[in-house]
Amino acid sequence: MAGGAPAPEVLCLGESMAVFVPLESGPAHTVRTWNRTIGGAESNVACHLAALGTSSAWVSAVGADPFGRALVEEIAASGVDVTATYVDPERPTGVYFKEPGARGGPVRYYRAGSAASGMGPGLLAELDLGGVRLIHLSGITPALSPSCAELVRAVLTAPREGRLVSFDVNWRPALWPGGDGALLAEPANLADIVLVGDDEAEVVWGTGDAHALRALVPQPATLVVKHGERGATLLERDRDAVFEPALRVRVVEPVGAGDAFAAGFLAATLRGTAPRLRLRQGHLQAASTLLTQDDVGLPLPPGVVGELLEADESVWAAAELTARAVQRRNRLGESAMRSVAREDA
Image 1 (cartoon, rainbow, N blue to C red):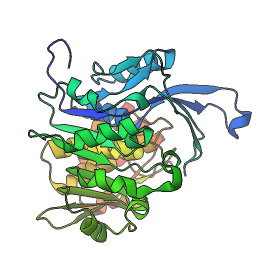
Image 2 (image 1 turned 180 degrees about the vertical axis):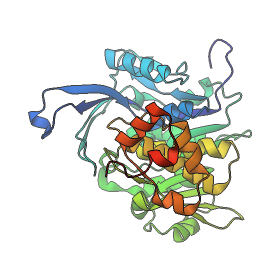
Image 3 (image 1 turned 135 degrees about the vertical axis):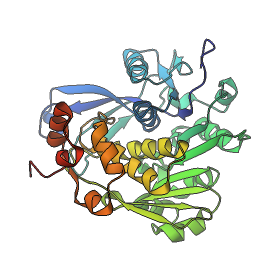
Image 4 (image 1 turned 60 degrees about the horizontal axis):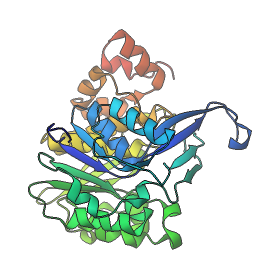
């Protein structure tokens, strides 16, 4: 985006933080060794998109500190354009700590007054959007500060000029004093593509039923309702609803899977892929993160992805991904269908 380089296809706008994951088992107060990585909904999506071959940019603000420098360097190393990310000389980079587990665990945020919370609507005028086909936002950003909420609204109400805007609800109750999820209903209804979990929809709209939700969110052309390990439903104008079951995955840690699903779905959408395959691409990308403790996992082997995308319903339903099987078959380069068998059950 700088120096005359062509703009990426997707611009992801939002805060990322330094993430600390324990390297020892047990409660956090007993852990002495931690691994520092990075995390943030929008940068996660940008990194996944880059891994899928869709050019992406991450726009945010970080502190003039080692964590901010690490964020920018590591996200850039994933193939993401970071040239529009600003270094704030006064505010710090946000930090959070994870206590992982297969069913999730506490996530402790230290982000109040962070560099990203200082972003505002003036940022939009500074961005070169030539060539950008989609801007991706989440419901986390408007919770960071009043100026961030104004920025999100500015993006959603600006002339589209042929671009799409996607909005992942990403409900975080700790960020919304009073737990008022209804504050996310308006920005969601201004987007072109909305992604939401049925549990989040219960908080924001009072229902997790996909068809009832569609009546309450009529404006977006595309609505994806995620049902956790059951699957996801896609509802689009002038098309029948499509439900695609999720893959069975031996989950290591679930945080970040929603961002991975969003990236897979958006990449396939920009390629004009058929509805069922767009959902499958989302499920496959989510699986890559479910198999790791990191917010952005390593891509699944191309053979696994290719064969599962085209698999019939019975093969898809019978497949089960485990970290050991995928890693082993990735090394050996063997058939995807054998790699997802329950060989280490």
